[in-house]
Length: 276
Image 1: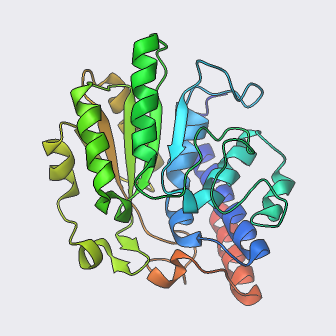
Image 2: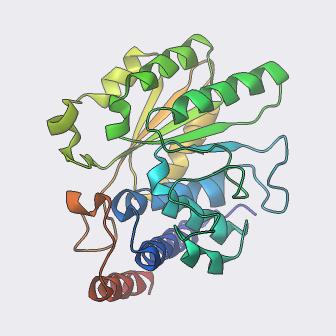
C-alpha cells in the first residue's frame, strides 16, 4: 500500500534509524553513519514510490532496487523488515554466524534483495543492465540504484553512466547519498571530487538536487524522474552522515563503528524523542 502522508513516511524513516542502531549494536559491527543518512530515501522508495509486493518478492514486473553501497545493508534490511519481507525480530541476527542478514546484502538469501552488492562502483552497472533488459522486454518497470558519494570516485560508475545515457534509460534513477564523508574524510579531500551535478549533466543525465532528509522534496524528485523521457535521472540527495543521532552526525569515525552500551542507549533515547 502506498503511503502518501509525509508525517507517516517520516515516522517510518525514524523507525528505520532505530532498527539500524539495534542491528549494529547487536552485532557490535557494521556501518551506522551512511545507513542513517539514507533512511529517509529508503522510506520514500519502499513506502511511497516502488511497485513492489512483499508477498510476491520475485514478481517479474516489480520495480528493482540496487543498494550499490552494500555496506549500508542495515538500512536496507530495516526497510525490508518494516515493509513486511521478513520478521523484524531477525534484524538482531545481523552479521551473526548462520544469519542470512550478513554485512552486505545477498540476493539468494534475503527476500526483497534484487542484487548482491559490496564491491563499490559495481551496483550502477547491474542497475543499467536491469534497465536495458526491461526496455528490451517491454516490461515497464523502473530501476533504482542508491550510491554513496565517495563511491562515485570509481571509474566503473562513469562507464555505466555512459551506457545509461547512450541507451536513453529513462527507467533508471540513480540516487547519490551526498553526505560528503567517506571512510578517510571528505570526498573532496580523499578523491578531489567536486561539481557532482555538472559531472552527471555532462554524461547526459537529468539531474535533480534535494535535501535528502526532506520527505516532500524526495517524493517530488522521484515523481519528476518518472516523467523524464529518453534520458536517465540522478537525484543528488544532500544528507548528514549519522543523521538523527547527535554524537554521530557529521562524524567520519562513525562510518564503520558500533556503539557502546551507553552510546546505544543515548542514540535510542534521541530517536525515540524524535518520534514523539
